[in-house]
Length: 70
Image 1 (tube, helix red, strand yellow):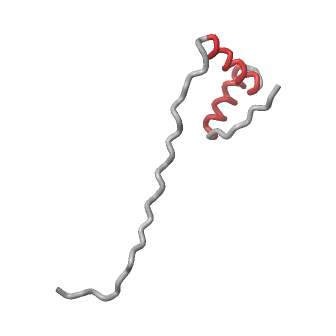
Image 2 (tube, one colour):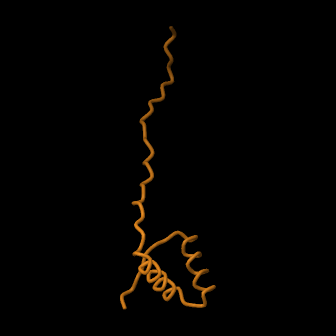
Image 3 (spheres, one colour):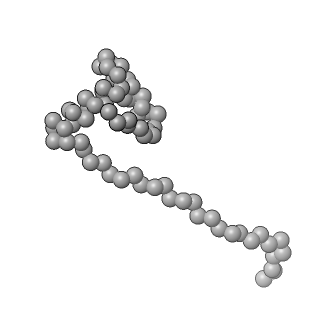
């Protein structure tokens, strides 16, 4: 069998671990069975693509010590 590996948020990992433990099976078996449940119901659901967080804008600010009197 091929190895499945990926990074997920800690809360997602905890949710899968908890569900597997409460089912009395390994997480590997749980994920395999979960995929089978989805397949029986028409296939794995599609999810939206992640949205990248916008990068902060950087401005060069010139600080002037002399002020012009009007």
